[in-house]
Length: 118
Length: 116
Image 1 (spheres, chains in turn brown, yellow):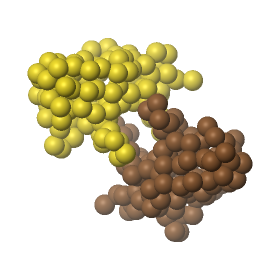
Image 2: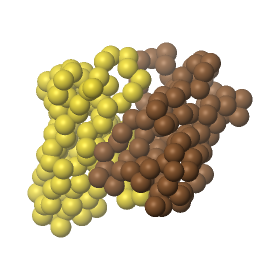
Image 3: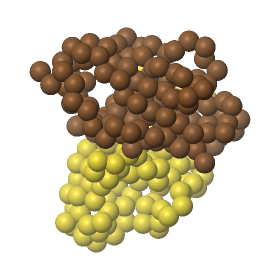
Image 4: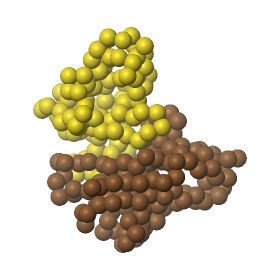
């Protein structure tokens, strides 16, 4: 069964340090996509970064990069030079069943609460 | 970028009343919208997929008569929590894809429901 695992319930990181949030996934599909979303205390879900299973390069978006290790089935989020505003919940998610676009489904991890210390 | 507007952000109601939450796509048409529920300190739980012009597809365990979904236009989906009870108190959040086949979901800001 498809599954997303985020093993870190919470993390404290000093401001300006880099931080890695772990995400492992399980799927039998060959074609899938991996996402990271940020949820501040206000509640909205903010899309950060996407990695397709066939993408050869690790995805990057500004200070965010996705360390995609396909053989290990991991898709860790790396935030460089962390800022106080990065404090939030972070969710890893996966989409498979690409073959049926009408059956769009995201499988979500439990989330990691990141707190940036000044 | 694509924007999904959700209203209201906060609602407090008495037990037994019904509450309607609106989800609008502001600058794109959404044939499909997704409604999630989130309990405190937990992940998102998909409740149903709202389909424009047809019945919503509910996830297993979600009461159709409790959570009424209407997707009457390409830009508006509504979730009505009927005869709300304290156990319905939760954070409800909607989302949509800004183009058919898009991978990324755009989320509304969420609605926090408290039933007294």
